[in-house]
Structure formats: C-alpha cells, structure tokens
Image 1 (spheres, helix red, strand yellow):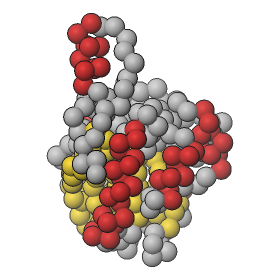
Image 2 (image 1 turned 90 degrees about the vertical axis):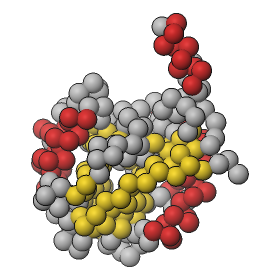
Image 3 (image 1 turned 180 degrees about the vertical axis):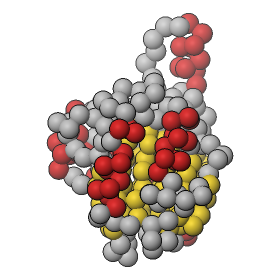
Amino acid sequence: MRILFVGDVFGRPGRQALLRRLPGLVEEAGVDLAIVNAENAASGAGITSKIARELLGGGVGILTTGNHVWRQREVYEFLATEERIVRPANYPSGSPGRGMTVVTTRGGEPVAVINLLGALFMDAGIGPFRIVDRLVDEARALADTVVVDLHAEATSEKVAMGHYLDGRVTAVIGTHTHVQTADERVLPGGTAYITDVGMTGPLESVIGVRTDVILRRFLTEMPQQFVVADAPVRLDYVLVDASPDGTARAIERHEEVLDDD
C-alpha cells in the first residue's frame, strides 16, 4: 500500500495547486490513499465546509487539522457529521468532530488515521502521550495500517512520539511548522517517521504569509493583518510504502514547485 501525506495546505494558492496536481501525482506514484493536513486552507486560518468538500471531492481521502481547526465556526457541524475529516483527539470530548477515523483505500483496504496536538507551546487540552495508547489500541482493532498526524511545534516532542509508537503504527508524520525537515526514515520497529512534512503554499513567503507583512511585524513589533502570499506554490509531501502487516517499508520526502498556470 502506498500512502501520500501532503503538508499543511495554506490558503487559496495551496488549495488550487493541490487540486491541480493531485490527480496526476496519485497516478504517477501509485497512491492508494491521500491524506492532507488542511487546517490553514481557509485564508491561512482554519477550514470551511465548502473547502473541505472541494478537497475531498478532488481526490483527498481524509483531511487532518490542528490548532487552527476552530477558527471558522461554520465548519463545526461538518466536523461532527463528516467522518473523512479529523481534529486533534486531545481536545475535550465535547468538541465537535472526532480525533480518529477509518477510511478505505482505492483498493478497499482500511486505514486508521489519528490526529494529535502537541503539548509544548500549543494549547492542547491534554498531553498527547496521555491518550495515544488508547487511540492506537482502538485504531489497531479496526485496521492494520495506522497513520498518526502529530501537529506540534517542538521537534523533541515529535521525535519522542515517533520512538514511543515505533512498531505500533505505520507512520508518525509531523505537521505545523510549515518547514520540511530532512530526517525521514523508517525507525527500527518499522514505523515511518518525519519531524515535519512541510507546507503546500506560497513559496516566496514566510510560512505562507506575505513576506513584507511579517517583516513589518518583526521590525515594528506591532500587530499586522496577515495576508496570504501569491503563487508560485511549493508542494511538500511524503510517500509511505506500507506492508500488509502495517509496518512501513519506506518513506520518501518530496518538494515540488508549481507555477500559477
């Protein structure tokens, strides 16, 4: 089984580039399931139900999110009813939506996806290490292949989670920083790992936002209205090859630069 995981989609440029490139990428790479982190898909802050439907209708198998998932109130009902989108499982149980779900690949095989929020420098309701054992047990009862999206700021927390879950899940994929790391590998127990898959958004930007806006913020130390930068877009993703028993055989890191044609 080959799983595609696409890094944080940022704003309209990221969405449009992904939807243009995804069908070809799926065919070229032999992808069985596309997982996309889309918590910044709506103007760089959150996701709407319209955008979620557009992405799911464009070939995305499941959407993961992160700390900005609550920024667009309109999406709350969609989170509660649509099983192909997850929010961090360590938010309070009364929050809309779910933190773990199971989807099927193009070949009909089940894949469980868990979404977690880091505790360090993030507003997590409960630390991810305190609930992940239960989530993994639930996921493994439903599918041999389990993918964890750890949306976190601290690299140490992501690396620790990779080692903690090594041999128990297929992949631990880090998101949130929008900067792709070069540490992808299959851990000794058979879990594919990368600290951060990166971003699908404007190349000439500061993690998606127009450079002049961020420079003005740093230089003046005054609040600024964030503005999504323009194309070209960089598309960051990893490809994970999974064995039938749920262990990973390989993980490949990729970055493509796409123009606005």
